[in-house]
Image (cartoon, rainbow, N blue to C red; front, side, top):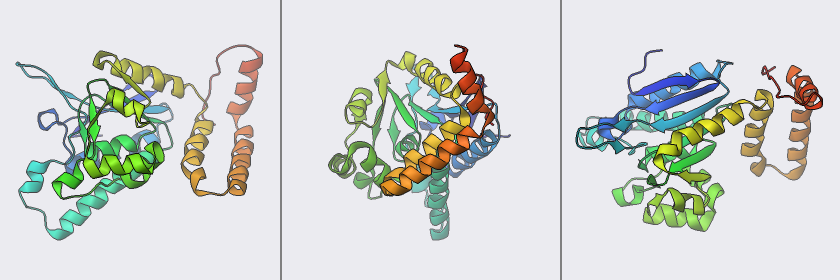
Length: 269
């Protein structure tokens, strides 16, 4: 798998994706979306990977490192005016397809925001499952101040996370939140010192990677969809998920490990 704008490695059962255009604050270009899709497609079929972390690389300079998760779209390329109207449309659809794949990825995705997240970076952050932030990292939606608009499902995801009024405030004003502020409004689950961010993300990812993969996939799917359904439909879907889990080898392993007082060894089948 040849990647130009992201790095991918693994730590046990956890895959780690790093956005890697540090000299541009990991700003998005078309190739980054293509690289992300390539990694997601590869990891989707890799039974050895049970959870993903998405984070940004650091620009290491002699006069000091600069942290960034993703500063949004690369405005330098946008301002060049080289895209035709059709190419602009294709760029937007490519971005939306990438965030959709993140949102619907069957394995848990932890987003570790290590520095500024703006625009497309904030959109990717909201399409993960669990958002962790460094205390000094920031996240915001500056689009109304740039005469553009949010994408990646932000108008849906943000409302579900923080409520309609707070979502309006954040999108209308473009107010920037640091890690502790993001936790306080319900946008992030935890904020930690920068040096602890990746270890904390790995600890959480390894915890999730130890859960039964089929159960985790059902949990993600139904938690996403249940708010759109009535209670009767939710109960039926949960019943079908329970029955499907009970037909797996992992269900029997879960029962055995509980009675034998040991850690389960799930196979994902």
